[in-house]
Length: 147
Image 1: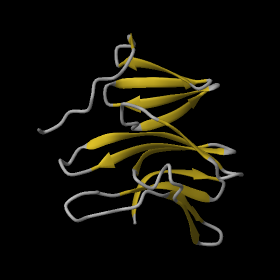
Image 2: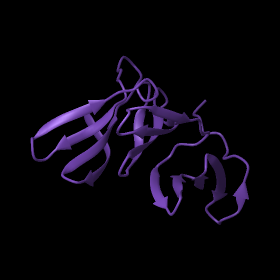
Image 3: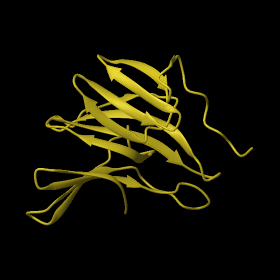
Image 4: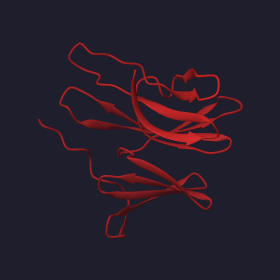
């Protein structure tokens, strides 16, 4: 288990799992928490998360948001989307994205998703994308490749 992004919330250390997935190495995406009182781990690996490593995490009262990516063969990351996971029902909803989420922040009634080229704002299920200079764009460019 390689600990990726993490956040402390009410006596629990929430974290996402990170792993390299190529050249004979395989992993299963997961997230969970370490309970500092019981000193025990709890892991979740819903189908929406299992193929990916966790690149970013935001824990809220009833929801865990996860940025996902695939770290593979050419030693670069590819987008895996964003997952909203309900703490009470354990239901997951995946939002496909063309960019890797490197950070998630709550801003009022929206989420700010950091990425290498700028950021995106998710509000009411709709995504707006912005370059670092604040200019709005339709889509981020595809990830670079070594080939």
